Image 1 (cartoon, rainbow, N blue to C red):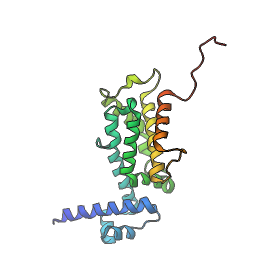
Image 2 (cartoon, helix red, strand yellow; image 1 turned 90 degrees about the vertical axis):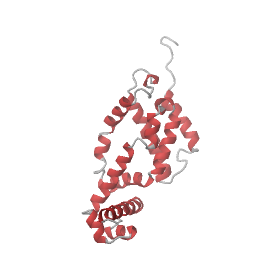
Image 3 (spheres, rainbow, N blue to C red; image 1 turned 180 degrees about the vertical axis):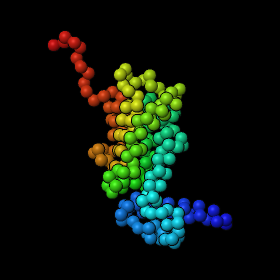
Image 4 (cartoon, rainbow, N blue to C red; image 1 turned 90 degrees about the horizontal axis):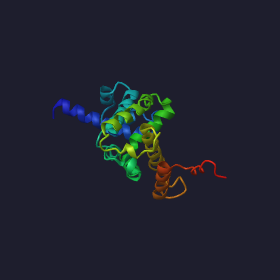
Length: 210
C-alpha cells in the first residue's frame, strides 16, 4: 500500500475514533492517547495528522457541516422533494433519519456548547438563514411556497419547522429521552404539524360581533 493511502487510512481511523470518544466522553474527557488507542495507531501518528486535539475536534464539526449540506442528506432530500410546506410529517421523518444517522456528530454540537461556549459552531448558525434562503430559491420549482399564507416569511417558516423537528429528535435520540412530550412520537408529530400549519390560537371573531 502506498504511503499516501496508508496516511489517508490512518486519518480516517483517527477521525472515526475521535468522533466516538468525543461524542461519549466529551472533549476534556478524551486525550490524544485515548484516540490513538481507539484508532489502533501510535500517538505520534495522531499528532502527525492533527497538530492538536482542538484541530481534530474542529475537523469533525466541519465534516458534520459538510454532511448537512450534502444533497443526499435525508433532510435535504425531503426539502428538495417539496416536503416543506406540503408534507411536514415527511419532513419530520427525514429529520429523524438524519439525527439517527449522524447521532454522534449531533452530540458534538452540545459538546461544543458546553465546553467551548459554542465557539466552533457559532458561525454555522449565524449563516443558517442565508443558507435556507438560497436553498429555497434554488428549489423554487418543487417547493410550494404558494401554500404559505400571505405575510409568512418562507425562510422563517422553514427554519421554525426544521429547528423544532431536529431538536425534538436530538432529545429523543441523542439525549435518550423518548416521549418527552408525554406521548408517543407519532402523536406529537401529528399535533406539531397541525400547529405549524394552522396556528394555535382561536380565530378572531368577525368585527362587530358581540
